[in-house]
Picture 1 (cartoon, rainbow, N blue to C red):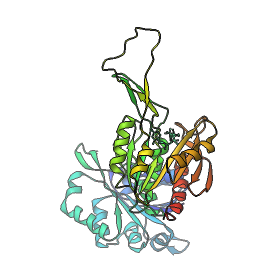
Picture 2 (tube, rainbow, N blue to C red):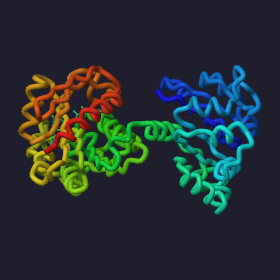
Picture 3 (cartoon, rainbow, N blue to C red):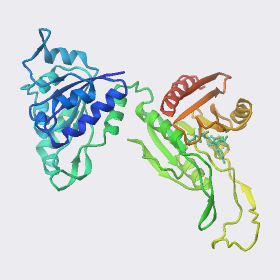
Length: 396
Ligand code: PMT
């Protein structure tokens, strides 16, 4: 867990950083907070201290056990996060002005730095601010751009404090292993819908959570991630490009279109195996007691991939099993020409479909098998990528 030095400047969004401190604390991160004098007008040090379980520093001339604060804090932290960053502090930081505890500490800090500018749109778009932020970037700062939306003063534009989840994601990305940098990762997630008539379709119970966590885990490690998603009710992970599809045919087309680009393919989607042969143009009427649907096999996307894949592309399937899980998964690993398959038991209600948790066995082409015991899907995704990393380098 990282030691996070959260620096808060005096913008209206200062109150939103309280929740950021709380989230960092919940994740088990050690937090210390610096507030500028102006920030204390928008939110109190006591609130930050209570919510983040952090010591809050406001005065450059305070000492802690006789030690000067800015040098101590700058050596203590793994990452410095300035959220929100006002135009005023951006100007000072870009020019190396050190006139308060925050700016002094930032100047002395040698680790990774993240700034979250947040201000009125006209201040943000002012060339002076634009130049100051560019200068910070050139000096090694990571800048998380503000969002568009309604601003505190009733105006609309770019300048809104972004979602804290995106800031947490950036902290993970910046402090993370960076070991998928420049790797193109194609992920599929969620169910497909196979239409019967204009109002009905066949689908399955996939929520998309496992696939979305795979996409997020790869993005955190600095991969370029393209997510092909069936219909789900999930937010696109920060920084991930997403294409929405509905049917297995649409998913197949979307995957094949991206195959040339992909270095790693992760097929977590639950693709329908059968689809109605005829799609009725009109809603099917309730005229008889029984209705027989004539079904045909869908194309197997992984099989199609195996025909076009190029050397050193690493292809991973998931196996949703209800019985003989390992045996069936091993068969799919071989028959679909995969480098790896992740077997999960979808009979259990405490893992698998729609759960926040999963428990899987990772089976590799060379016969290696790794059991990942029940854990949150985000942790399972991270562990799967660790295994992918070691097996990918062994590709001929
Ligand atoms: O989405 P969640 O609610 O988080 O649940 C996660 C999950 C259980 C859906 C996921 O972990 C999972 O197991 N995904 C694969 C589901 C599946 O379709 O399994 P399968 O055993 O039927 O297929 C094996 C592999 O072939 C899969 O990688 C699948 O994407 C692929 N396939 C299947 C059918 C088809 N026509 N083309 C394919 O490429």
